Image (cartoon, rainbow, N blue to C red; front, side, top):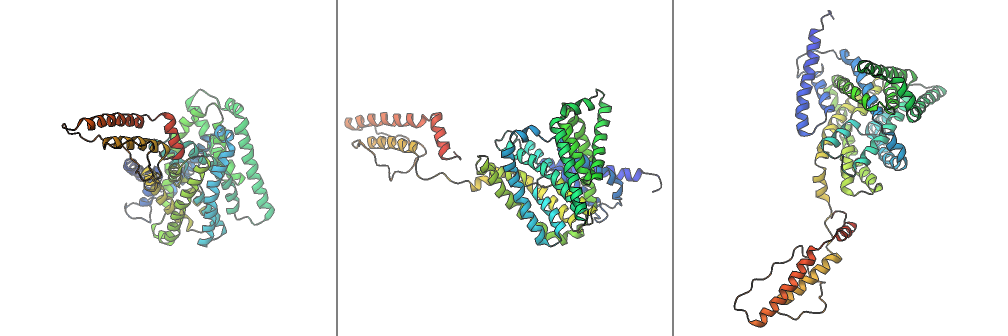
Amino acid sequence: MDGHLGPELITLGFLFLIAYGLGRVGKLIGLPSIPIYMLVGLIASPHFHLIPIEFDSSYVELIAVFGLIFLLFNLGLEFDQDEFFGNAGKLLISGGSYVLVNMGVGFAFGFMVGWGTREALVIAGMTATSSSAIVTKLLIELRRLANPETPMILGVTVVEDIFIAVYLAIVSVVISGETDFWAVVLKLVVAFAFLVIMFAVARWGGRVVSRLIQTKDDELFTILIFGLAVTFGGIGELLGVTDAIGAFLIGLALGATRFRARIEAFATPLRDVFGAFFFLSFGLALDPSTFGDVLLPVSIAIVMTIVLNIGAGQFVAWINGFGPQAGLNTAVILVNRGEFALILATLATAGGLDARLTPFAGLYVLVMALVGPLLAVNSERIGALFRRRKPEVPHELDLERDRELALAEAAMAGEPIPDEVDLAEAPVRETVREPVPVLEDTAPDIESALEREARLAEQARSQSDRLTEDDVRREREIDPEY
């Protein structure tokens, strides 16, 4: 480098401007930003010649580390401890079953691919959890925060956050390549001790931490937050639990303070900017020529993920007392994969695992981050295609309604009104029939019959319109789709 950074700065700025333009287009069709940033990095990589420039990806690697740190820092900051500890039993069953189903099948799939045991462990992690960033953005953009199933979805993501913390601690030890049994045990003990201590600080040390970080100066407060996130990222790296977990845990502790909202206001822009660098850097490392080697495994993983999520979504909805549509809404929101899969791929590359994990993760996340939002936007339409029809057997309310109509029809025809009307063969009617037109020269006896018919018809109409709240409640108990 000759000391002039002008061309590199122009190139980097140009890439972010492209990301901005594509991001605006993506917003119009409901796409999240993660795949867009990856695509921008991909088209600017030396392996892809769409943009005729040479850009050294090493220039953004350090900034990409900051992106990884702040992605996990914000994840810890937004962790809802009250929600988790206040409803831990149901959340662990719901979120735990969701994670275990996806991880178990993903682990078996990793063995089927045949890349190795450690690679299978990484693939299981990629397929086990959804992208918290994409899930949150979709819930907001689709205006589903008020939906009854949304607390259940957020509860699953809370359990996933805990799983990510524990899983990264385990994977970092496994990937390290340590073969001495006691050395591995020591690393795991240190990792879990770090997790337990920081969780304890977050749970019971909020007041103490609040006093330690309080300052009225916004500039100094921002510097403090940045310094803590980076410092604990380094501590996590030294302890063998990765910089991402160190950042997550300090975010968890700071999220328990009374300054949580203020920290979020400063940390979110840092996450957005540095996170964009992380995804851009990952895209720069992708080689499109290697996609052919992982096309079949990625295709199987995508189908497997969608099918498993549909089943897991229905199961979680059933546990929480929701119907099939809520289960489908849950599945298509949680099917999105994103930053965690890329973090695992980055760790796998640093640990010297199979090089195919990088293109696998890149192509998998790209497709899932595109397919997931499209499924989420159309989940109501998809549910309508499979929604079961109402039963043909008439409900008690419908029988009473048809009995009154049958009496009215008998009067219209001038027939004697029976004491009981046999409705076994009578079709279920959705509306009251209009009265039959009457000729002006009708005989007096027919006129009296018509008068009686009119009274009965009016009574039938009155009763059919008199659906009380109790009637509606009974309908919904019998048919939840009512």
